[in-house]
Image (cartoon, rainbow, N blue to C red; front, side, top):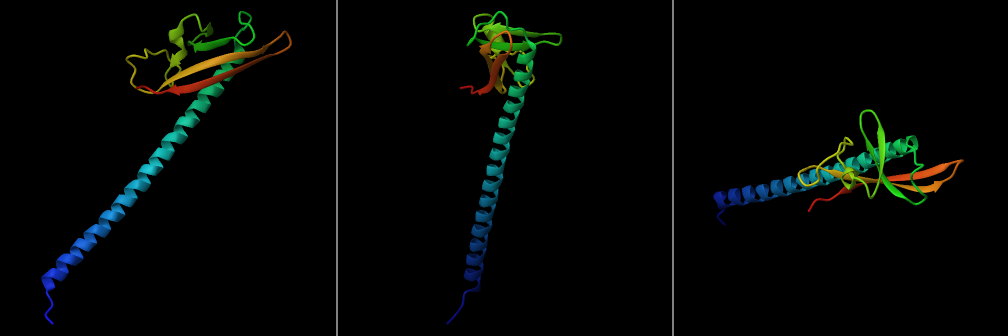
Length: 138
């Protein structure tokens, strides 16, 4: 029986290339999965921090003008904290990750919306819950 050394070499090279290709594809899939997990963790963590900040700021504002179960949103400047009802200044409910006012039509990064709800208002105590959500641009 005669062996063809060139044919065996070509087949072994092709098999080696296929194996290396499969290894590279699986490594890239693992890296992509890890990046997706990191992105989701960062997003959830960032929203949680913004929510905690909103709840802290909500405790500092005067809600005498609001009734129970009123929705409002908070806008913070360098010197003061303002609370707007949903009817007033609807644009101020959209913020970026630095709590800055943004134009939603021209802003290209993550846009957040925050809303607070006066659940209980009495002379003795008040309960306000704030939530922050990331908007998805289409």
